[in-house]
Length: 113
Length: 110
Image 1 (tube, rainbow over the protein chains, first blue to last red):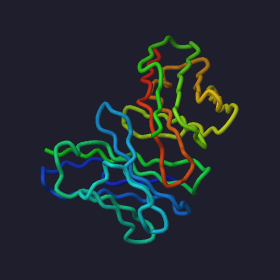
Image 2: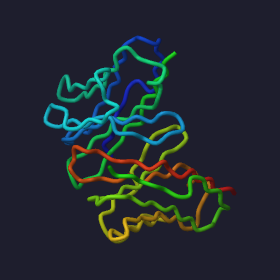
Image 3: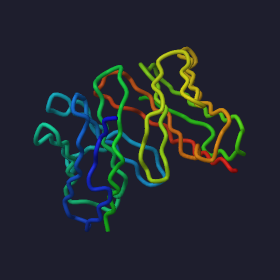
Image 4: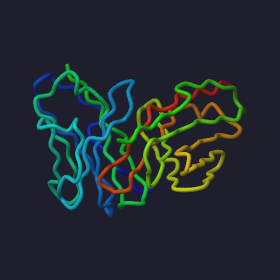
């Protein structure tokens, strides 16, 4: 069964550093998403991406964050100048489109120290 | 803004018991998703419902669109069912993504 692949599985970074989280969505899916789950809290929507541009973003997704699809397969989330409160599990997901289900990656646990 | 509420937050039961987890949401949606999250953190999709009922093995999901309510049932529960079960509302635009509930932490004791 096709999978969404996320790398790395765990990343530790110093406060103020930039991190890039990587995702390979399912190849024939058209919508891509990033979600965040702070430890002990619910999963929160960050951003959706369709047709090579951001479709929607939440109020969490401020200028510190950016997304890119640098080639035909990868989908990245860049977090600039990381803060302690950015420590969370970040999930990538993809979907064929409205009315279809979602496939989630196994997540990247980001720890900012 | 769509609010998704789940109950109970925590549930401990004995192996073999029938389990029910409830989910309610505040605005009209196109579909309701039930997801499972294991201790390692990964999220697996169990069901996507827009009406009626779906069954997969020992899992049954129902939805009442008029009452804005969905339930997930587990029959003949087993310790391997122990996980966090999350409902998530889909507004259906594709771009909006999902709005998640806080999850129900289920423990099935042998």
